[in-house]
Image 1 (cartoon, rainbow, N blue to C red):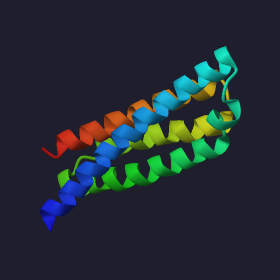
Image 2 (image 1 turned 45 degrees about the vertical axis):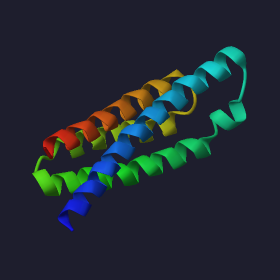
Image 3 (image 1 turned 135 degrees about the vertical axis):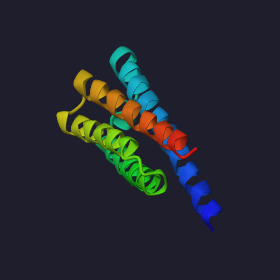
Image 4 (image 1 turned 180 degrees about the horizontal axis):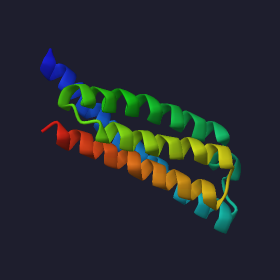
Length: 123
């Protein structure tokens, strides 16, 4: 049972890393496609995509990083991930543009790094 829970936690951390990367790519690619080429503004910059992404990041981040604290007792990855999630939430509130992109990329970078630290702390 313990091995199964550890496997699930590791997979959640992996999913968090992948989601963070996809979010960063979406943010950067969306800005380029809309700003430079004028394509896909309605779909790529839809607020719904950002809200769903934030909810997914919150669920995966808090569950996997929270399990990590219970397992290895290190709060650092959870705090770092929380800061990243706060930056992502702030990005949604500032609206589209450069500030949103910067906040989002900084946030997802911190969340991904927190998941990586969480995996390494468990070793």
